[in-house]
Length: 509
Figure 1 (cartoon, rainbow, N blue to C red):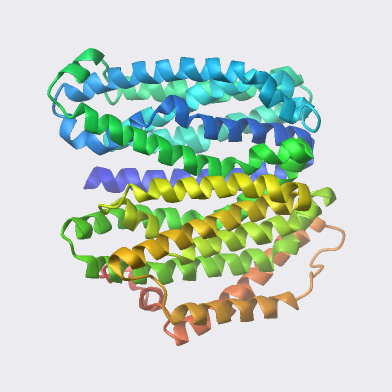
Figure 2: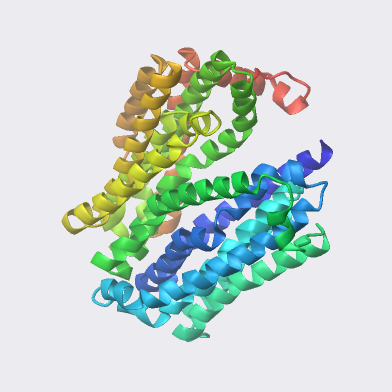
């Protein structure tokens, strides 16, 4: 267990450092040093990369993730690696051909509002292929219990390289074409190090791909599972990143550059959800295998209220500080304030529905997630096309949030029909009242001038000031009303100092 603890600690430090870098530079600094159209160009290239990367990936990394324990002691893993590399190469070639053939169709969507993208149309190809292969090597590293280095390359090195590229461009040390080229090279460089690391340090091998197909392993089952994951990943990525592709077609790259700043801030509410989900998955999977649905029900109820509690707290602080946050941006970004409200509310409601995806994924009904994800994707497409022309950036935010809520309602109704439980309780009402009350009080606290003629420092000071008041107003009724036993236990451990001494026993999830 020592290696898991060390790797987990290192990865957590790297992840939070990466988030901090992203927030400081990509959200707050870059709008002041380069034009919003170039921020939009970066965002469009990245969103296209995220959506298209699932096609060359073919779900091969997910097959390895599922069957690694069965294959790792045999030649099967080496053979599957080779088979995956060849399959992904073939899929990459097909993607390139399809992307070239669709050039006129795609460019027609951007030539009026986002002409800056047209000269760099083919820049998407290397980004997609590199990202697809990077995901495979990262999952291989994860299976070898070595996640710190890949996390460093993804969260720190790539961001640092992109920050350097943006600064070189901002100070006119790179031309526009060199800027886009250096942007691609940053991803290529991190990928090259990742490949070297997995080959030299983790002994990645890929030999004899035909043997994987011919030997007596359940090839058909694994390929079908890969197809399932390909569909699921594609549908999910389209939902998550489609707004960043459709928006510039209607409103231009500048609008996308503005839109992505508050959108990212709103999504950050869900960072704790991802960590809690990863911790809970093994417990849910074991309980479902043992057919202990009471444990699953109790777990879902307990984690549901805790997720909603954390989400409500972060939502409160974010919304209460929105005016101060936007004073850090250039004045033209003020038009995207409603985007932050809509995205943050959508992500908060997503957390309120508990672990419904995880429960379905590890039950015998796991294939239904594909249907729900397909409906979510189609609703996202339809709503973006319908709402962006009418409401602009707010329309894109509404499309994402509405489709996400519909997705959660479908999953919750399905779980109720099949297992007869949900995560909601009377404590949700208490949390809503606390959140509304704290937001109401903080609304009447004006923007204070702590320092004369220093908007940036005043904005930061106001954020700290309001957050301190909001935290106090939120925590006290939360503790008194005993909304979450886990939260009360945590507060007691902090107040008594036991949490800093170690050796205490926490309530099981």
